[in-house]
Length: 141
Image 1 (cartoon, one colour):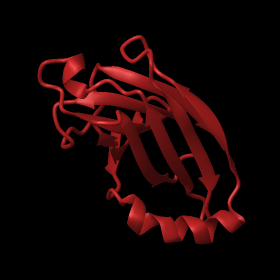
Image 2: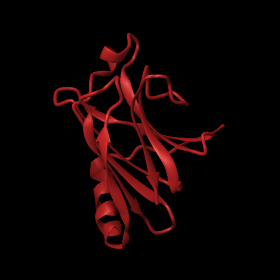
Image 3: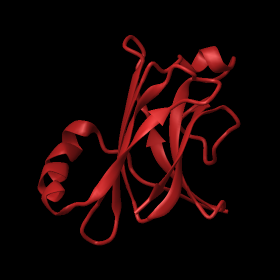
Image 4: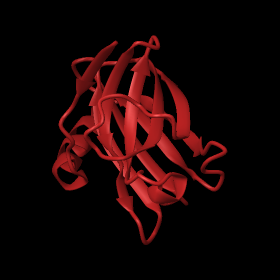
């Protein structure tokens, strides 16, 4: 199993790069719907092709449950990119607004055909996805 971690970039730091790169980017948007553990979850996952062959993934999720409602020791949501069932990229922790129950993540990946998963985890230091899956979709660019 191959696991890689990208540094998490905040929205404020990454926005200028998105604006510059969006002029030459292509991709798509997928509507988000949660699993049985998060039936009210909605939102979108957008992918854009960047120069150099990478993909920019922008995830916006709404009506998220609190992580601790899904399990005793769960405290955060992690986003994962998985290719060929054995290449796992830890995209980062979902920026979660507990009051509004919204989540946001922006991350880049060299993958082009992969799954995006969101799991509830005990901390943002985990190296592989746990069992508490709240969202899953496929990206193909």
